[in-house]
Length: 347
Ligand code: SF4
Image 1 (cartoon, rainbow, N blue to C red):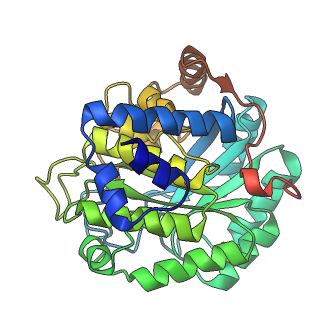
Image 2 (tube, rainbow, N blue to C red):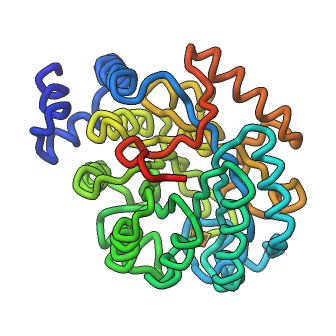
Image 3 (cartoon, helix red, strand yellow):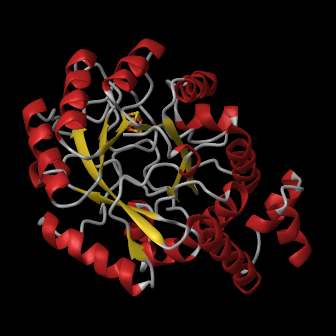
């Protein structure tokens, strides 16, 4: 066991070693989790970053087979938040001490990219917030426009590093295009986030090992990993949810491999895992995202069902999450929480 973990820690491992680590039983995984927690302490410290999530639109042109807001789901009532409303919520978040705004939405041409660029510029000029975008695949020029407007980070989960599996999950997507987008984001200087689901239909343990190898080679600044949660109104209806224990092993391995990546304890983990946020923090996570989307929209942004929303009141959510962080003997960060390798030159 120690030999296996030492190999992974010193970046001297094979794909089979990763598969073996992902297959550890609960007794064996104690050493894995204690190593990932130690690496988190040594490389990242005790701070936990709070990010403010705003689900700006559920309009999407894509048909990912696992997603509740996929284009072909006619049962979804679609919305697009007005730009002015997004701006006003951003100001409110800033006042409440939340120093990162994450604007997430379906992949579509719903917003004019120039309007979004103006919005980013306004937010950057009038708040002390970092701006993260999570709006899917776009052209190099569009990513450049938003970067030049001041966006700091972009989340684009790679979803799976295995081509066939990617096609199985995304009938209208191509892994190479996804990876090209990720390379473009890095080239443009975004702090770039990748990630995948654990337990998605068709996934094999060796695919997760391939995800870990991809993460090692791509060197993302952020990695988001959560369990697959089944949605009734998708082609994957009836498939079992992802396994929480396997998700925790995956998170621990990402921490050991990347050392410094920003890693959220995801809402999906909190949704199906008892005390999911705490478990995530205990194996190496250092970010929690709080949903600031107004209730009238939040209920329509159902990528998966039963999403963990502690309260409708954002003040209550904030104080609950801060208490949770402190109860884990960690500190609530009050800064923008930029990626550790490129903190310099970020506004
Ligand atoms: S996962 Fe994202 S891109 Fe895929 S259908 Fe859902 S919102 Fe659209």
